[in-house]
Length: 185
Image (tube, rainbow, N blue to C red; front, side, top):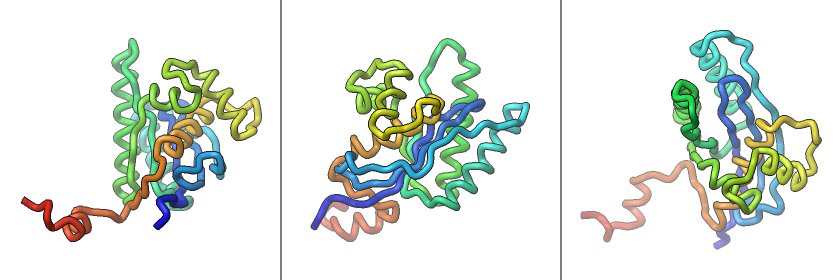
């Protein structure tokens, strides 16, 4: 049995002003063959934080329904100097989790350090270094915004880090118990 599986991944770089997203397809364990299907930045034109969250919910609900990714991978927010920004990003992340769970799409988060390490080889790389590496690897336009290349880095990291793992969004405890009756207490 082959441990390599074709998969479509939606990478998201969360931000309430500029939210990067990138849809990639490829085979787990063969990241050299990964292709970008769509890459862009969603900019909400709404004024209040609550309206922006609703706008993001609507956009991603429709996007995921249309594109049908196998998994959504989100960059984890990190605590900077502004606690209010962290709270807003936490709410946004909650919205993205809600969309994924509502549409029965698994959600995974990766830390900025994991992403930077995977893409550049340095866990403390700058956004510009990450952007440069993604643009070089996928031969992307130099004018692409860093929010979009960050989202590509998120999705690409999933392919890099998920070597020889079969991801099955339909797996569940019932199946696990059936396959492992000796592990029940």
